[in-house]
Length: 387
Image (spheres, rainbow, N blue to C red):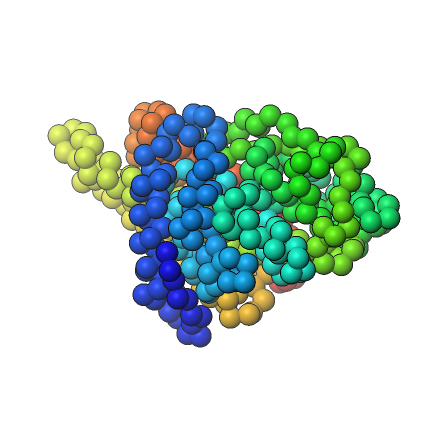
Protein backbone atom coordinates (compact mmCIF):
# COMPACT_ATOMS: atom_id res chain seq x y z
CA UNK A 1 0.00 0.00 0.00
CA UNK A 2 1.31 3.42 -0.92
CA UNK A 3 -0.85 6.13 0.60
CA UNK A 4 -0.61 9.90 0.47
CA UNK A 5 -2.47 11.30 3.44
CA UNK A 6 -3.39 14.88 4.12
CA UNK A 7 -5.22 16.33 7.10
CA UNK A 8 -8.60 17.99 6.60
CA UNK A 9 -9.51 21.28 8.21
CA UNK A 10 -13.24 20.97 7.53
CA UNK A 11 -14.73 19.12 10.49
CA UNK A 12 -17.90 18.42 8.52
CA UNK A 13 -16.11 16.09 6.12
CA UNK A 14 -14.70 12.96 7.70
CA UNK A 15 -13.67 10.85 4.71
CA UNK A 16 -12.15 11.56 1.32
CA UNK A 17 -10.74 9.55 -1.57
CA UNK A 18 -7.60 8.59 0.35
CA UNK A 19 -9.70 7.22 3.19
CA UNK A 20 -11.74 5.22 0.70
CA UNK A 21 -8.52 3.79 -0.73
CA UNK A 22 -7.41 2.70 2.73
CA UNK A 23 -10.82 1.16 3.39
CA UNK A 24 -10.68 -0.84 0.17
CA UNK A 25 -7.15 -2.04 0.84
CA UNK A 26 -7.99 -3.00 4.43
CA UNK A 27 -11.11 -4.83 3.27
CA UNK A 28 -9.10 -6.77 0.71
CA UNK A 29 -6.61 -7.78 3.39
CA UNK A 30 -9.33 -8.81 5.83
CA UNK A 31 -11.26 -10.80 3.22
CA UNK A 32 -8.13 -12.66 2.14
CA UNK A 33 -6.07 -13.08 5.30
CA UNK A 34 -8.60 -13.12 8.16
CA UNK A 35 -12.21 -13.99 7.28
CA UNK A 36 -11.53 -17.55 6.01
CA UNK A 37 -9.77 -18.49 9.25
CA UNK A 38 -11.66 -16.65 11.97
CA UNK A 39 -13.64 -19.63 13.26
CA UNK A 40 -10.49 -21.73 13.51
CA UNK A 41 -8.63 -18.98 15.37
CA UNK A 42 -11.50 -18.45 17.77
CA UNK A 43 -11.41 -22.09 18.78
CA UNK A 44 -7.61 -22.01 19.07
CA UNK A 45 -7.72 -18.96 21.34
CA UNK A 46 -5.26 -17.01 19.22
CA UNK A 47 -4.40 -16.12 15.65
CA UNK A 48 -1.00 -16.84 14.04
CA UNK A 49 1.87 -14.46 14.78
CA UNK A 50 2.42 -14.30 11.05
CA UNK A 51 -0.68 -12.13 10.72
CA UNK A 52 1.21 -9.22 12.31
CA UNK A 53 3.94 -9.51 9.68
CA UNK A 54 1.43 -9.76 6.85
CA UNK A 55 -0.40 -6.68 8.14
CA UNK A 56 2.90 -4.85 8.55
CA UNK A 57 4.04 -5.75 5.04
CA UNK A 58 0.97 -4.14 3.46
CA UNK A 59 1.23 -1.05 5.66
CA UNK A 60 -1.87 -1.72 7.73
CA UNK A 61 -0.15 -1.46 11.12
CA UNK A 62 1.60 1.83 10.35
CA UNK A 63 -1.43 3.88 9.38
CA UNK A 64 -1.43 7.14 11.31
CA UNK A 65 2.17 6.88 12.55
CA UNK A 66 5.14 9.11 11.59
CA UNK A 67 6.99 8.20 8.43
CA UNK A 68 10.34 8.42 10.25
CA UNK A 69 9.42 5.36 12.28
CA UNK A 70 7.96 3.29 9.47
CA UNK A 71 4.43 4.59 9.47
CA UNK A 72 2.19 6.43 7.05
CA UNK A 73 1.01 9.67 8.65
CA UNK A 74 -2.49 10.98 8.25
CA UNK A 75 -5.48 12.24 10.16
CA UNK A 76 -7.37 10.27 12.78
CA UNK A 77 -9.88 8.89 10.29
CA UNK A 78 -7.33 6.74 8.50
CA UNK A 79 -6.95 4.60 11.59
CA UNK A 80 -10.71 4.64 12.05
CA UNK A 81 -11.44 3.23 8.59
CA UNK A 82 -8.74 0.59 8.99
CA UNK A 83 -10.14 -0.36 12.39
CA UNK A 84 -13.69 -0.54 11.05
CA UNK A 85 -12.68 -2.89 8.24
CA UNK A 86 -10.72 -5.16 10.57
CA UNK A 87 -13.83 -5.40 12.74
CA UNK A 88 -15.66 -6.61 9.63
CA UNK A 89 -14.01 -9.98 10.16
CA UNK A 90 -16.60 -10.49 12.89
CA UNK A 91 -14.11 -11.18 15.68
CA UNK A 92 -13.42 -8.54 18.30
CA UNK A 93 -10.55 -10.70 19.50
CA UNK A 94 -8.70 -10.50 16.21
CA UNK A 95 -9.27 -6.75 16.04
CA UNK A 96 -8.09 -6.25 19.63
CA UNK A 97 -5.03 -8.46 19.30
CA UNK A 98 -3.89 -7.12 15.95
CA UNK A 99 -4.51 -3.58 17.20
CA UNK A 100 -2.74 -3.82 20.57
CA UNK A 101 0.08 -1.68 19.18
CA UNK A 102 -2.33 1.26 18.96
CA UNK A 103 -2.46 1.51 22.75
CA UNK A 104 1.16 0.46 23.35
CA UNK A 105 3.01 2.76 20.95
CA UNK A 106 1.44 6.24 21.34
CA UNK A 107 3.24 7.05 24.63
CA UNK A 108 6.55 6.13 23.01
CA UNK A 109 5.73 8.21 19.93
CA UNK A 110 4.73 11.26 21.98
CA UNK A 111 7.29 11.11 24.79
CA UNK A 112 10.02 8.69 23.78
CA UNK A 113 13.52 9.42 22.50
CA UNK A 114 14.56 8.79 18.91
CA UNK A 115 16.57 5.80 20.09
CA UNK A 116 13.49 4.36 21.82
CA UNK A 117 11.37 4.86 18.71
CA UNK A 118 14.00 3.13 16.60
CA UNK A 119 14.06 0.14 18.97
CA UNK A 120 10.45 -0.09 20.09
CA UNK A 121 8.30 1.44 17.35
CA UNK A 122 9.80 0.47 14.00
CA UNK A 123 9.85 -3.32 14.53
CA UNK A 124 6.25 -3.29 15.78
CA UNK A 125 4.96 -1.30 12.81
CA UNK A 126 6.75 -3.76 10.53
CA UNK A 127 4.94 -6.60 12.28
CA UNK A 128 8.22 -8.12 13.42
CA UNK A 129 7.42 -7.66 17.11
CA UNK A 130 4.22 -7.58 19.16
CA UNK A 131 3.58 -4.71 21.56
CA UNK A 132 1.08 -4.55 24.42
CA UNK A 133 0.00 -2.03 27.05
CA UNK A 134 0.22 -3.14 30.69
CA UNK A 135 -1.65 -0.92 33.14
CA UNK A 136 -4.28 -3.02 34.96
CA UNK A 137 -3.30 -4.97 38.07
CA UNK A 138 -5.06 -7.84 39.88
CA UNK A 139 -6.01 -5.61 42.81
CA UNK A 140 -6.32 -2.30 40.99
CA UNK A 141 -8.84 -2.43 38.16
CA UNK A 142 -9.57 1.07 36.94
CA UNK A 143 -7.73 2.69 39.87
CA UNK A 144 -4.57 3.63 37.99
CA UNK A 145 -3.41 5.96 40.76
CA UNK A 146 -3.36 3.02 43.15
CA UNK A 147 -1.12 0.71 41.10
CA UNK A 148 1.35 -1.31 43.14
CA UNK A 149 3.94 -2.65 40.70
CA UNK A 150 7.20 -1.07 41.86
CA UNK A 151 10.31 -0.04 39.96
CA UNK A 152 13.20 0.75 42.29
CA UNK A 153 16.09 2.58 40.66
CA UNK A 154 19.51 1.04 41.18
CA UNK A 155 22.27 2.80 39.24
CA UNK A 156 21.33 2.52 35.56
CA UNK A 157 18.54 -0.01 36.06
CA UNK A 158 15.04 -0.26 37.52
CA UNK A 159 14.26 -3.38 39.55
CA UNK A 160 10.60 -4.17 38.83
CA UNK A 161 8.35 -6.29 41.06
CA UNK A 162 4.63 -6.88 40.81
CA UNK A 163 2.12 -8.08 38.24
CA UNK A 164 -0.32 -6.99 35.54
CA UNK A 165 -3.49 -8.70 34.39
CA UNK A 166 -6.06 -8.71 31.55
CA UNK A 167 -3.29 -7.72 29.12
CA UNK A 168 -4.37 -8.00 25.49
CA UNK A 169 -1.59 -9.71 23.48
CA UNK A 170 0.03 -10.28 26.89
CA UNK A 171 0.96 -13.91 26.31
CA UNK A 172 2.94 -13.27 23.12
CA UNK A 173 4.05 -9.64 23.44
CA UNK A 174 7.73 -9.04 22.80
CA UNK A 175 7.52 -5.75 24.67
CA UNK A 176 5.05 -4.02 26.96
CA UNK A 177 4.51 -0.36 27.71
CA UNK A 178 4.19 -0.80 31.44
CA UNK A 179 2.98 1.47 34.25
CA UNK A 180 5.14 1.21 37.36
CA UNK A 181 5.52 3.04 40.65
CA UNK A 182 8.84 4.84 40.82
CA UNK A 183 7.86 7.35 43.49
CA UNK A 184 5.40 7.87 46.30
CA UNK A 185 1.73 7.03 46.41
CA UNK A 186 -0.86 8.53 44.13
CA UNK A 187 -0.62 9.91 40.62
CA UNK A 188 2.72 11.66 41.01
CA UNK A 189 4.77 8.52 41.58
CA UNK A 190 3.97 6.66 38.36
CA UNK A 191 6.27 6.14 35.38
CA UNK A 192 6.14 4.24 32.09
CA UNK A 193 8.79 1.69 31.15
CA UNK A 194 9.19 -0.44 28.06
CA UNK A 195 9.86 -3.94 29.38
CA UNK A 196 10.96 -6.64 26.97
CA UNK A 197 9.59 -10.13 27.49
CA UNK A 198 13.06 -11.76 27.38
CA UNK A 199 14.12 -9.83 30.49
CA UNK A 200 15.08 -12.20 33.35
CA UNK A 201 12.36 -12.23 35.98
CA UNK A 202 9.59 -11.58 33.43
CA UNK A 203 7.02 -14.37 33.16
CA UNK A 204 3.52 -14.84 31.75
CA UNK A 205 0.54 -16.96 32.77
CA UNK A 206 -1.22 -19.24 30.38
CA UNK A 207 -3.93 -17.72 28.22
CA UNK A 208 -6.80 -16.44 30.35
CA UNK A 209 -10.15 -17.95 29.34
CA UNK A 210 -12.65 -15.22 28.57
CA UNK A 211 -16.34 -14.87 27.78
CA UNK A 212 -15.49 -13.15 24.49
CA UNK A 213 -12.53 -12.01 22.39
CA UNK A 214 -11.44 -15.65 22.28
CA UNK A 215 -8.87 -15.19 19.53
CA UNK A 216 -6.91 -12.53 21.40
CA UNK A 217 -4.32 -13.95 23.77
CA UNK A 218 -4.96 -12.31 27.13
CA UNK A 219 -2.49 -12.92 29.93
CA UNK A 220 -1.25 -12.05 33.38
CA UNK A 221 2.35 -10.84 33.56
CA UNK A 222 4.64 -11.23 36.57
CA UNK A 223 7.81 -9.33 37.46
CA UNK A 224 10.27 -10.86 39.92
CA UNK A 225 13.29 -8.59 40.37
CA UNK A 226 13.05 -7.74 36.69
CA UNK A 227 16.00 -5.50 35.82
CA UNK A 228 15.09 -2.93 33.18
CA UNK A 229 17.57 -0.36 31.82
CA UNK A 230 16.79 3.24 32.76
CA UNK A 231 17.14 3.91 29.03
CA UNK A 232 13.70 2.27 28.70
CA UNK A 233 11.99 5.00 30.74
CA UNK A 234 9.43 6.83 28.59
CA UNK A 235 9.51 10.56 29.25
CA UNK A 236 10.27 11.85 32.72
CA UNK A 237 10.30 9.77 35.87
CA UNK A 238 7.12 10.08 37.97
CA UNK A 239 5.21 11.75 35.12
CA UNK A 240 3.77 8.62 33.56
CA UNK A 241 0.24 9.19 34.86
CA UNK A 242 -0.27 12.09 32.47
CA UNK A 243 0.88 9.97 29.53
CA UNK A 244 -1.51 7.23 30.59
CA UNK A 245 -4.46 9.61 30.79
CA UNK A 246 -3.59 11.05 27.38
CA UNK A 247 -3.34 7.54 25.96
CA UNK A 248 -6.73 6.60 27.39
CA UNK A 249 -8.42 9.11 25.10
CA UNK A 250 -7.13 7.27 22.03
CA UNK A 251 -8.05 3.89 23.51
CA UNK A 252 -11.57 5.07 24.32
CA UNK A 253 -12.03 6.29 20.77
CA UNK A 254 -10.92 2.91 19.45
CA UNK A 255 -13.36 1.14 21.75
CA UNK A 256 -16.20 3.43 20.68
CA UNK A 257 -15.43 2.58 17.05
CA UNK A 258 -15.38 -1.13 17.91
CA UNK A 259 -18.72 -0.80 19.69
CA UNK A 260 -20.28 1.00 16.73
CA UNK A 261 -19.02 -1.65 14.33
CA UNK A 262 -20.25 -4.42 16.61
CA UNK A 263 -23.68 -2.79 16.48
CA UNK A 264 -23.49 -2.27 12.72
CA UNK A 265 -22.58 -5.87 11.93
CA UNK A 266 -25.15 -7.28 14.37
CA UNK A 267 -27.84 -5.11 12.80
CA UNK A 268 -26.87 -6.16 9.27
CA UNK A 269 -27.01 -9.82 10.26
CA UNK A 270 -30.41 -9.29 11.88
CA UNK A 271 -31.79 -7.58 8.77
CA UNK A 272 -30.51 -10.36 6.53
CA UNK A 273 -32.02 -13.03 8.78
CA UNK A 274 -35.36 -11.22 9.17
CA UNK A 275 -35.78 -11.14 5.40
CA UNK A 276 -35.09 -14.87 5.07
CA UNK A 277 -36.70 -16.38 8.16
CA UNK A 278 -40.40 -17.17 7.78
CA UNK A 279 -43.03 -17.51 10.48
CA UNK A 280 -46.76 -17.96 9.98
CA UNK A 281 -46.27 -18.02 6.22
CA UNK A 282 -44.26 -14.84 5.70
CA UNK A 283 -40.78 -13.41 6.39
CA UNK A 284 -40.53 -12.10 9.93
CA UNK A 285 -39.34 -8.76 8.47
CA UNK A 286 -42.95 -8.17 7.44
CA UNK A 287 -44.18 -8.15 11.03
CA UNK A 288 -44.49 -4.64 12.40
CA UNK A 289 -42.92 -5.49 15.75
CA UNK A 290 -39.82 -6.77 13.95
CA UNK A 291 -39.64 -3.89 11.50
CA UNK A 292 -39.87 -1.32 14.28
CA UNK A 293 -37.22 -3.13 16.32
CA UNK A 294 -34.83 -2.96 13.36
CA UNK A 295 -35.67 0.71 12.74
CA UNK A 296 -34.78 1.49 16.35
CA UNK A 297 -31.51 -0.40 15.98
CA UNK A 298 -30.62 1.47 12.80
CA UNK A 299 -31.43 4.86 14.33
CA UNK A 300 -29.31 4.24 17.42
CA UNK A 301 -26.35 2.95 15.39
CA UNK A 302 -26.47 5.97 13.10
CA UNK A 303 -26.58 8.45 15.99
CA UNK A 304 -23.79 6.75 17.91
CA UNK A 305 -21.50 6.52 14.89
CA UNK A 306 -22.03 10.15 13.95
CA UNK A 307 -21.33 11.32 17.50
CA UNK A 308 -18.13 9.27 17.62
CA UNK A 309 -16.98 10.68 14.27
CA UNK A 310 -17.70 14.22 15.41
CA UNK A 311 -15.69 13.79 18.60
CA UNK A 312 -12.87 12.21 16.60
CA UNK A 313 -12.83 15.17 14.23
CA UNK A 314 -12.53 17.58 17.13
CA UNK A 315 -9.71 15.55 18.66
CA UNK A 316 -7.95 15.62 15.29
CA UNK A 317 -8.39 19.40 15.22
CA UNK A 318 -6.56 19.65 18.54
CA UNK A 319 -9.59 20.33 20.74
CA UNK A 320 -9.81 18.82 24.23
CA UNK A 321 -12.51 16.14 24.23
CA UNK A 322 -11.97 14.36 27.53
CA UNK A 323 -15.63 14.68 28.52
CA UNK A 324 -16.95 14.02 25.03
CA UNK A 325 -14.89 10.90 24.28
CA UNK A 326 -16.00 9.46 27.62
CA UNK A 327 -19.59 10.17 26.58
CA UNK A 328 -19.01 8.68 23.12
CA UNK A 329 -17.58 5.48 24.58
CA UNK A 330 -20.40 5.07 27.07
CA UNK A 331 -23.06 5.82 24.48
CA UNK A 332 -21.57 3.51 21.84
CA UNK A 333 -21.28 0.68 24.36
CA UNK A 334 -24.84 1.14 25.59
CA UNK A 335 -26.04 0.99 21.99
CA UNK A 336 -24.00 -2.12 21.22
CA UNK A 337 -25.42 -3.71 24.38
CA UNK A 338 -28.95 -3.15 23.07
CA UNK A 339 -28.34 -3.91 19.42
CA UNK A 340 -26.48 -7.18 20.02
CA UNK A 341 -29.18 -8.23 22.49
CA UNK A 342 -31.94 -7.43 20.00
CA UNK A 343 -30.06 -9.15 17.17
CA UNK A 344 -29.87 -12.38 19.18
CA UNK A 345 -33.58 -11.99 19.97
CA UNK A 346 -34.43 -11.67 16.26
CA UNK A 347 -32.46 -14.85 15.55
CA UNK A 348 -34.33 -16.64 18.31
CA UNK A 349 -32.79 -19.99 19.26
CA UNK A 350 -30.22 -19.72 16.47
CA UNK A 351 -28.88 -16.56 18.04
CA UNK A 352 -27.86 -18.66 21.03
CA UNK A 353 -25.97 -21.15 18.87
CA UNK A 354 -22.25 -21.16 18.16
CA UNK A 355 -21.49 -20.62 14.49
CA UNK A 356 -23.87 -17.70 14.08
CA UNK A 357 -22.17 -14.27 13.94
CA UNK A 358 -24.60 -12.61 16.35
CA UNK A 359 -23.73 -15.11 19.08
CA UNK A 360 -20.07 -14.13 18.93
CA UNK A 361 -20.84 -10.42 18.63
CA UNK A 362 -23.04 -10.67 21.72
CA UNK A 363 -20.18 -12.23 23.72
CA UNK A 364 -17.45 -9.99 22.33
CA UNK A 365 -19.49 -6.89 23.01
CA UNK A 366 -19.54 -7.35 26.78
CA UNK A 367 -15.94 -6.30 27.36
CA UNK A 368 -16.24 -2.98 25.52
CA UNK A 369 -17.88 -1.19 28.45
CA UNK A 370 -15.13 -2.50 30.75
CA UNK A 371 -11.91 -1.98 28.79
CA UNK A 372 -10.26 1.43 28.65
CA UNK A 373 -12.12 2.50 31.78
CA UNK A 374 -15.47 1.14 32.90
CA UNK A 375 -18.79 2.83 32.28
CA UNK A 376 -18.79 3.95 35.89
CA UNK A 377 -15.32 5.51 35.59
CA UNK A 378 -16.42 7.30 32.41
CA UNK A 379 -19.37 8.75 34.29
CA UNK A 380 -17.09 10.03 37.03
CA UNK A 381 -14.91 11.74 34.43
CA UNK A 382 -17.94 13.29 32.77
CA UNK A 383 -19.31 14.42 36.14
CA UNK A 384 -16.08 16.28 36.94
CA UNK A 385 -16.54 18.30 33.76
CA UNK A 386 -20.21 19.18 34.16
CA UNK A 387 -20.76 19.48 37.93
